[in-house]
Length: 592
Picture 1: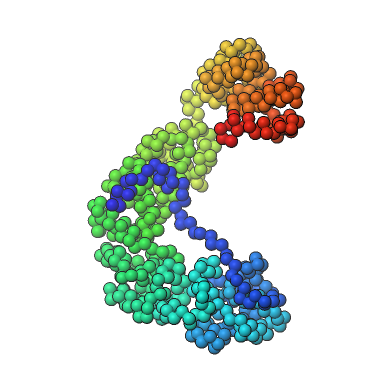
Picture 2: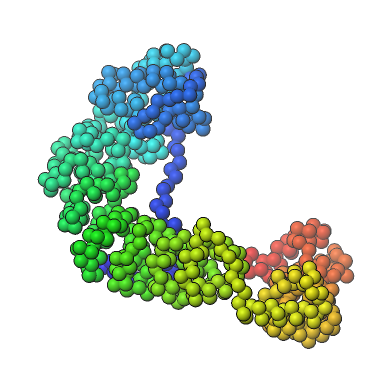
């Protein structure tokens, strides 16, 4: 089933793959302002201090941004301490929460504490604690706010979890019970928020259910310290029965000789792991002929093949290679020779190479050939960007494409941090340049003059093509000397293909009614799109019919003037001119 999914990748999926960065994109959760605890409270006058209280969650109240967008950095350490003591006293003595829980909530909920401080008004910092205690006596707080924040959740994360009909933690007995079970088991309080966010069902378990699930994992031989690390990394392990995929992955890795501590070292608590997908990675390699010994060596040397994105990055790489004609045996062989580089970095390098090949207009078949023949090379080099390569090598896209195909090993010299020297001119390029020089000299250009240098930079194509295009304009009915002057003024018109030049001249003479001699005065007409010329001429003819413009305007004035100026000078002079302008524009420009 897995192989079927990989082999059904489409070209669109490959382009989608390479357009992404493959780094895990972290969502930027916006701060959600909390509702005021005390609607009628006044604002505290704050005092400055350079030091602040560091909490277990590594959040400093002095650096907290208030709900009004103001910075709370001026709250003194003494005020913070007094506020924490007052909140602790309220939660423990008044509300009856366990001392450890109350202390954790008071010390590790800086956003909530800052909001609480803004509700009291006292110039004497020694009386802040008394002021907070007095307000708490008459204005009970929503205890779930500091509770969730003390578990490691941000306000924007825990607001959706706030119960609508409850304010006191003791009213949710199951939540407190399961929280207590996790704490007593040894899970850090500031890690429990991740478990709550990813496996909220755990906190709805009836009494003794959670303890039995923890015990079931221990009976499989998993130590308490290891199980804590696994649960924080994969909270869903506590949902349902013992997770079969998780247990099987552990058994396979142990059969390779990896101890549980090695597995723990490769888990990052801030990430969440999909053990079913990791099991698929192991099965895929085994099914394609990789022995246990070989797979053990591979995973030992490159654990991120399994743990990076729980194998998602590995599957993305395999799918990409399959799309370009790799067989699974070839992919397997490549992994056995995998260089000392992270899989994610390998994938990013390969992606960037693909993007460069695509931007220089290399054919898909040609790209596939290079990827199949040099996958390890492409995955280990950080290639420069396309424009940097073109400028540094002083070549065009076709030349660069040909150069890479003929010298793929040279790609290692086109990497970031290395200086790129211009490539020597190809023989055909030298011949073409000589033809261009001969052509310009024949048309009256002075050798090594600025005009000749500018024309050479503008000319695209071979020297023989320039002559063919020049003759095309002459054959339309213009004198050779006039065409030479046209080229001197607008050399870029010879970049157009002969067929395009013929169509534009035909349109000018047979559709717009201008004499071919008008090209001599306005040679850059050939550089403008037919849609623009048609649009401007029709607009001008309408204005002329209304008597709103001079009937003797030159073609260059009609076509070359900017839209803003043409509207101001001509179109806006007639009351319905702007509307007619819009109508013509929508008629002649399909993109409008």
